[in-house]
Length: 350
Image 1 (cartoon, rainbow, N blue to C red):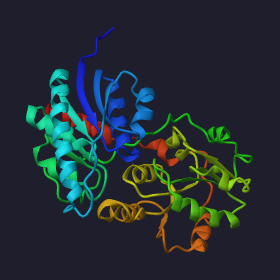
Image 2: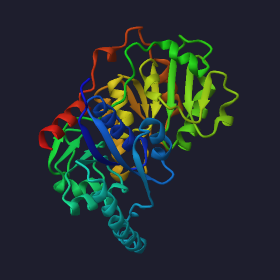
Image 3: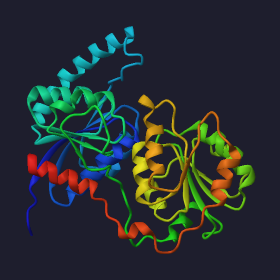
């Protein structure tokens, strides 16, 4: 049996599913070809702490206390945060030096800043991945020192050393069938089914909007990811879950989705060709979720709703006009080349 070559990689990303899942897709792809030794820097109390022990059980993990900079940037609290950041980076530098990685792979977010700074000082090559159409502060700051910065949108501005690869998506086995929805307590498997989710951090705004929508959509099944399940108990056609570990499996067989417009959600919506109601989060830096949503409209059947000024009837009409999917799904003929492209560039440059 062929012995796999070992790759030692430092990984970090911002604490949301949008940062975590592209990194996970990259790691899972590499597992097919290498014996991996992963050092993963995590954000305290966020998705990585819950997911990594299950998804990457062999990874060495370090939890950081790093806090992002406040907006506007000229804020006195930011002086303290920058000092804390520099102090933390010195400790990270020692850890990375002992680990002696081949390279780093970072998916953005403030947690990556002290890690990237340590990598830069140690002169260890690193690669960045930017999921959004408008890049975050850390990727903007450090892209010029990266070996390569991978972008998900061809028009992404402000970055250097870029190459367009797309955003890696998770996708299930092509053996998956609609019967998987039986795991979600649906009474009629072949009734139109819509997934409702507010990103890895949840969304009270989407809960509020959908509570109104559910008053007039008894003819549709809903699988709703929410932190407030009790609120929706009176709707028999609405099945609520605090968290769904493999939502991407559902996306392969459902008929539509109501979602925020985070970059990873958008990439999955486009990959699965999902009819979508997009509700961009207004708190996203530089309004990038609205920009993401508009890009999505160029690729799939979708409407964009303002989270504060929306028409319930428009959402209801859109959902009612969605047709149920055929048994053979379009995505069966697709493959996700994003992670393959990223890996090929790294192997060529490293």
